[in-house]
Image (cartoon, rainbow, N blue to C red; front, side, top):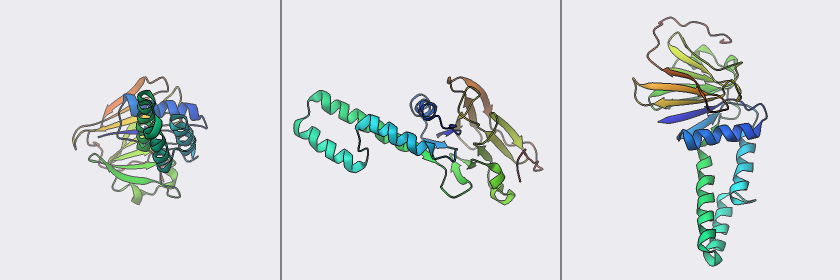
Length: 206
């Protein structure tokens, strides 16, 4: 399983769309999670969908367009319709953190992962089951061991990073890669079992 992470966009929807396109098309992630708390991904996806299929990017709109194309569409028009809808549906792989909750906890592949925008909102009890903690709010990307878990700070999308991929292959083979806005690999780490038994305090951890 390949999961992407998108750091906060800082209000730059074009940069967010480019980063999401990179994850969906080049990295072929099954899902990409936006780690901002500003609603930017929702605005980005709505505008993106409208460019792909028109002013009504809903499923109901798809059925209306399909009926029109079936009735009078040329082969080229039908091909464009199918391709546009395929790309629109691919956008469903983009997800946000749950609204009103400080974090999301999921098992990605076989990696128990806690995802949050602001780690100061997370308690030690929340962290207890996580092998990987992914944080959006950070000055720059880092990936370090802290106690019994790995901590990935993604940071804002831009020249210093903000885009990451977890390649969760098995319980013993998991790799995190961080990219900058020019799609350059700036960090590549295999997630072994953390060597430290005692929980250390990460900068900003409660």
